[in-house]
Length: 368
Image (cartoon, rainbow, N blue to C red; front, side, top):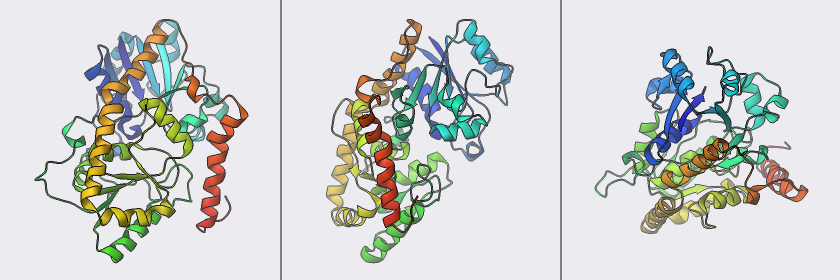
């Protein structure tokens, strides 16, 4: 099959990684059409395949030749961002079209300038990433984000590589942990934690923000311990990158996220040091005091990822979806992740929200 992806946003590089994974590990041919060179790309943030703003004719040709059109996040059948490409007309001509969500419905609707009902009522077969957004799209098939663990930048550093900082943190946003429910990694709070530990133990710390991905990967590779999102309860690609590089990664995964990760990996074990922000200080003191043990934890986390969460394994989840569509089937949600009942919905959506609000109130964030 010829599969062409369309995206109006870099989405942390996942559409590109997916296309590269399909081409490397499956017999299918995949292309990515980005709307433009995103501002961060000008700093070398991510690579591109076809850039619509530069070679629209190549995008039109790819769409015409495709068997499957894979639309990401802010695109549906009526989107005209890639005009003259008309997704609805191409569907009528027999192209298979599906949509993948990477953000919560409110964010997608806001970016599209569309009513929320249009997002939630989208008629296309749908996929959703296996991080926090999946709980908000109960009908969508859950698929994993992944990293190219065998590429040099994603491998552990050589033994003779120069060492870097003790604690490494790479937030995309600088908002407080209690300011923006999902769009934050708690940068002010994490930086305050690192400064306190530096004063107490003499450890060295680094926060990487607004840098090209290649530079973030290089700096993280030299660090001893990686801090990821310890506030919200979800996984992120940055944490997977740290695990792939053989680092012990601190992150908070709530009960729902752990269940989804187990479904994607096929095992109940997981590679994170699962800790909330408010509980992280003694954990970090312990790791800082035992560098050899921390190093072995990172190596074991890397081995877990290679065995259970490699790109060559996970890309098969997407191939299954394409083949089911090509065979005339739909994309139903996995039985183990259904949110049909009141208990399952409460456990996955409302209970984590209530717990987060209680934590915010205790930390001085007030009632939310």
